[in-house]
Amino acid sequence: MITGAQCRAARALVEYSRERLATASGIDIGTIESFESKLGKPDDTSIAILQSTLETAGAAFLPDGEHGGIGVRLKFNRSETRRIATLEGEGGLVAHDDVP
Image 1 (tube, rainbow, N blue to C red):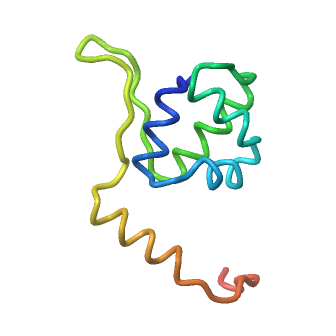
Image 2 (cartoon, helix red, strand yellow; image 1 turned 30 degrees about the vertical axis):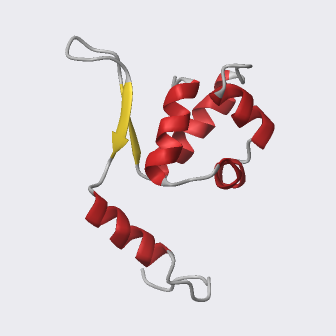
């Protein structure tokens, strides 16, 4: 389970606003705000959804271990992240793919 600080840091790394994370995850923006500012803790299901959404966006959460504490980093380097963002932003019509 991630912490509010990890959520906030992951959002910064993947360049998501709270609004974008709320839209992508389906979690209320107020819930995200109170979680990140330590004013409240959402249920475990909501935290798991936030974590999954941020991981899909490119964040990797690091567990507490003997070589360091909990943290967050990017799954990809900056160059790969820019290329992925470019490909995702190309747009076009969304339709069924006939490729088997």
